Every structure is written in structure tokens, then in C-alpha cells.
Amino acid sequence: MEDASCPLCTTPGGVLVFQAEKFRVIRADEVGFPAFYRVVWTAHVAEFSDLDLSDRALCMAAVGAVEQVLREQLQPTKVNLAALGNVVPHLHWHVIARFDWDSHFPAPVWGSPQRPVDGAALAALAARLDQVDGVIARALSV
Image (cartoon, rainbow, N blue to C red; front, top):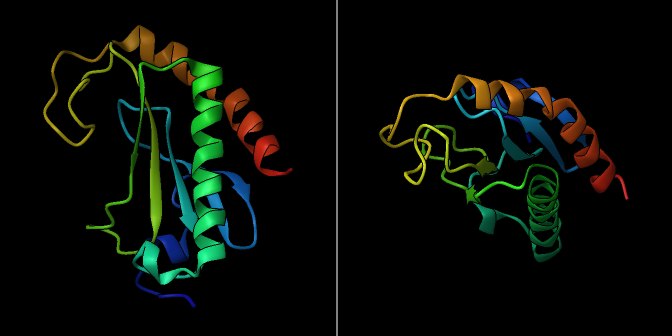
């Protein structure tokens, strides 16, 4: 199932970190939030409840694995999980490492900034993400 008008059906949606038959993990290009990942379901479905029980378990296992790697590798203040799909109605989970220094913390990344962007902290975090991507891929390959 694919929808030619859906950007998550027609493009990876970001830097491809891991690809499986039923899902992929990408690192999104979200300005100011370099450790912003998405677990994207391959088939074009809009809602989590569109999946059968085994696929729900597989999807959440992938979300959990990405969260665990981000916690271990980056020691964020918090990890945010969200499956909104309001803009792109294709099942995907946001897995976002958040830090007390990020411009929006503790507000949502889609909320209002709380402070100026810390360019040095962002650059230091971004420099680590290729390594983090590799750890995510290895964790999901098992």
C-alpha cells in the first residue's frame, strides 16, 4: 500500500538510519533539534490501530529501541514520544531526545521557544549523531 501524494510513501523522510521490511528509522531534519528521529511504518496506514497486534508490538519495539539508544548514548534530560500524524497522516512515531538547554525545553518542540538556540551545544550534539545512528541500526538488526 502506497499513497503517491504522501511524502512518507515517496521519500525516506530524512536521513535513513535503518530499513526493515515493515518500518524504517530516519533522523529528521528538524532545525534546532538534531536528535529528532522517526520510526516510519512502511505501509501507508494512518492510525496505530490499523496494525494487527503483532505489527503493533513490532512498531513499539522499534520505538523503544530507538529511545533506549538515545538515552544510553546521549543522556538527554527527557525523551519525547509522539504519534500525531496531523500534517502527514501516515503512521510514524517521533522519538526526540530533549535537553534542558534546548531552545524549547520544557515546552514541546512545536511550541514556543523558551530561550535562544545554544549553537555550541547543538553542534556538539550533531557531531555525535552518525555514531548514534550506527548504534540504532545495530540495536534494530538483532
